[in-house]
Length: 525
Image 1 (cartoon, one colour):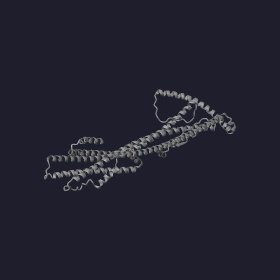
Image 2 (tube, rainbow, N blue to C red):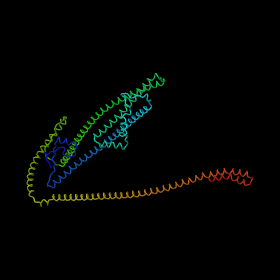
Image 3 (cartoon, helix red, strand yellow):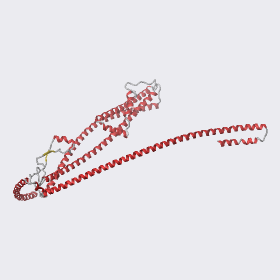
């Protein structure tokens, strides 16, 4: 219970955002707490019961406020996660295109270096001249170092490297990120400057070759077609050089505009952050006003319920301040009539109030007398009263209900622990079964590998045996035609010798043997 003079600061609750702590410490606004009317109380137990009811009501209000704050914080977390996802996607896109730019620059540098090497290799030593004062060869140390550092620093990121890049940026601080980006920017600028220098050297080399061709025109006059082509190529080369210069100037101007726009974007982002903080402050103030309005609505509803139930409270009347009301004459007359009726009613009520005041004074005297009697009242009489017995019965009922709730809570905890233990045992059984299956699978794989090795050995042995049989067969095939050819060569000589010796009928079988030999050779093959 508290009186109307009690005060508290507006930020006593811990449900406000952290950025409001300083403002709460600097400016402390005071609010008046309305008195709590508990009604008629006959004993301390009834007062404790009503105080507990009021505390439960306040705790319910605090719980609603906390749930609302949790919902707001959850929405803010979702928004921040979406913003972080978009930022990561933007960083990935920037990193990919930057890497593509660096790869393109590296390819251009390699192309220029290859052209320089080819041109230097095809030139005649007598006609080759050294570079001028403002001309540097393409294969200078800075370019070679740049070419060596390009593959190490710049690689096109795929999915996993891109995620690693984002994780590295998220893990590093702002200073480290700025240093990394500054190093990468300097490297890209150096590469682009090398490309521009290489293009300038190529342009100067082309102009020098044109001048050489024009200078040798008297001694060795080229053809008209070659001269026309040379002039056309020179004009095209100058046009391309002018275009490259214009593009370089445009790129420089655009880079300056980009830096200016980036500064504007930074300032705009700071302004947006300031506006967001202001909006959050205003939302916090609106939330406080909404909560205050809810409290006032609840108090108004309670007051209306009390008025409807006939419970009137005497107190100081508050008047309306400010504002001008314009009414028509008809409304003014109606208000005058209502005012007269209210005055008559007020007079009658005043008489009733005077009567009630007298009754109240008598009741106060009776109350004081009863208080004195109550102070001297013994405890046995209080315990025998119906109110005490009713409160005792209610207390015992509430106590039994609390014990039942406690036992139910203990049972729920035991059931939760039992289910948890059963789930853990089930998981252990599953893991043991998985290990057994893995062992069984491993043994089967080992057995299959052994079988495969044996089959391979058998296959090697069969292959070796087949090769040996094939070699023997080929040797037999080579030997049989050789024998057939020998017999064919020996047949005519034997026939000739037999004809010279005598005309003996033995020559007929010899002649009959001659066609048999090729058939035998073919059958052997």
